[in-house]
Length: 185
Image (cartoon, rainbow, N blue to C red):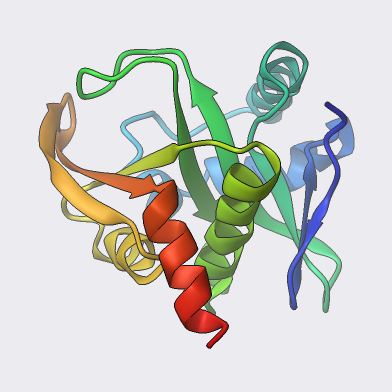
């Protein structure tokens, strides 16, 4: 499957490119962005280049991976968002599709995470024909939890990670379709 960019009213979600390294480093070297991720803040630009290579390999191996999020107004990469086939075991699940996102702090609170998650769900259920999508967030990350609830994810328990408790979410296809049908009425 050829990965095609997704467009929303204010955003373009497209496959990450090597040239995104500088903006990705801004994102992954910001302590406030990485606070609830459970990974250390990146300290070298080359680390961001490696992250991009890893995600590009996911595109090749799985046909999907996180996308660069570009704000149409500024034409700047403001974060990443999208689906990933998670092959690692998380909360007793393995080989599941999850939605995730990270944005630069100056773009928080503008609805971009919600907009990008909604585009990812459309891709998941309409193009990829998935039956369900999962997500999880650190229990103290109120903003991320709000985004997941606002986009219709159902809270489905908690689990322990090395850096604390995470909240587990699930979006079944039938819930997504019901939400879309209600929106279109």
